[in-house]
Length: 561
Image (tube, rainbow, N blue to C red):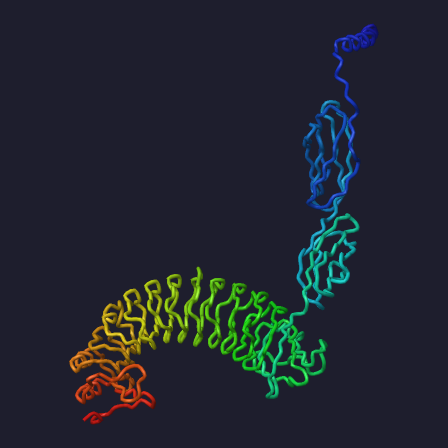
C-alpha cells in the first residue's frame, strides 16, 4: 500500500520536473490554404497557395489514380501545393505543417479534359464538317463568333459546323461541367468557279473537265449567267469530251462551278477567262483560244501541274512565278519574246515552238528533262543547271553557242535550220541515241568521232551540211542515217559502207544518200555511185533518195546506172 501511494505521489513531481526542463518552442501563425476545394481537368495543373504555418509543409493524396500532388516554392518563398488531374473522380489532399503537425484538407474534383479531333477547318460554302469530341463531360454548348459565316450545333459527342458564306469565324465549344472551352478556327471559301467569255459560233461548246468523285455532284455549268443551277446545267460527264448548248449572241459568258481539277477547252474562241476563283485546278488546256496579250491571271493557281497555252497568237506575257508545282508547260505559237520558268522548280517538260522568244530563264530549277524549243530566236541558252535533261530540240534557232557538257543524260539532240553554229562538242554526252544536226552548213564532222559512245546511236541525221569526210566506224548500231546534201567523196562513201553494220533486209535499216529534189539549204554534192548502191543493198540497207518536195524514193539496183 505504501508503494502505491509513493508512486502516485511521484507522478506530479515528475511531470513538474519534465515541464520545467522543456524549452519553449517558436510560435507560428495558423496554417491556411487559399481555398479548400478545386476543380480541374485531366492533365491540368492547379497551384494552391498557403499562408502562415512554419513554412515547411508536406502534402499527400488519398487517390493517386485521380490526382497527383507536390509541394513547390513560389517567388516569395512561400510553399504552395501543386495538384495535377490524372483521371476523372474525386480525391482529398492532406496538407501537413511539418513543424507543428497541423493538418488541412483540400478537396479535389477532376473532370475529363475537353479534347477535339480538330481545331482548324477549311470549308466550302454549303459544306458541313463533323468534329469528334474525344473527351469531356457530356454537357456541351457551341457558340460562333460570326453567324453569317458558319453555324454550329452539338449532337452527342459530335460538333457539326456548317459553312454559310465566305469568311472566317471561331467556333467555341464549352464543357458546362468543367467550364473548359475549346476553339475551332474555321475558314469558309466560296464555291470554286471558272468564268470565261467566248465568241464560239459553231454550235455547242466542247469541254473536257474532271473533278474528284466525291465532289462531282456539286459541279455545274452556268450557261445563262443567272448564277442559279437550272435544269440541264448539272455536269454529268467527267474525263471525256462533252458538249454544252451555247449561243454567244444570247449570252457569251459562262461559269463552271465546283471543285474542277482538270479543264480542257481547246479552240473554243475564248477571249477572256478568270480562273482565280478555283485554286483546285491541276490541269488547264486553253490551246487555240483568243486570249488577249495579257493572257490570264495565274496568281491563285498554285495547284497547277499542267498548263497548255499554245496557239494563242496574241499572248505576249505570262507570269508563271506562282506555280510551284508546274511540271508541264506549252507556250508554242504565242507572241512571247521571253520566258521565265525560274519559279517552277518541278518543271519537267517545256514546249516553246515557233515564237519570238530570245531567252529562257531557268534560274536554279534542275528537274527539267525535256525541252522542245525549236523555231524561236534563241542565240544562246544556259543549260548548265539541268543535269537531268534528256531531250533537247533547238532546231531553227540562230544559235551561236551551245554547251551541253553538263547534260550527261541527253539521249535526243536536234539542231539545225540555221548556219550560225559552226561546230559541235558532244564529248560529254555518252547517252545519245538520236542525233539530228542537219541543214547547218557545218564542214567539220570530227565531233562524231569525239562522241564517247557512238555505238549507242540509232538515228543519225546530218544532211544539209558541207561535210567532205565523215568517219562512222564506231556507229555499229545505227539503223537510220541521213547524209544526203553534203560534199561526200566516193572514197568517203567506200569507208562509210565498210563501217556500217550488216542488217537483214527485213530490219528496214534506212540510209538517205542523195537528195535529187528541191533543197532550201544545200545543193546535192555527194559522189554516190551505182557501185555504192549495190554494196549497201548487199548489206541489207534500204537506200533512199530524199527527193525533197515530194515523197522519198527507195533506190533499187540499176536506178543509178
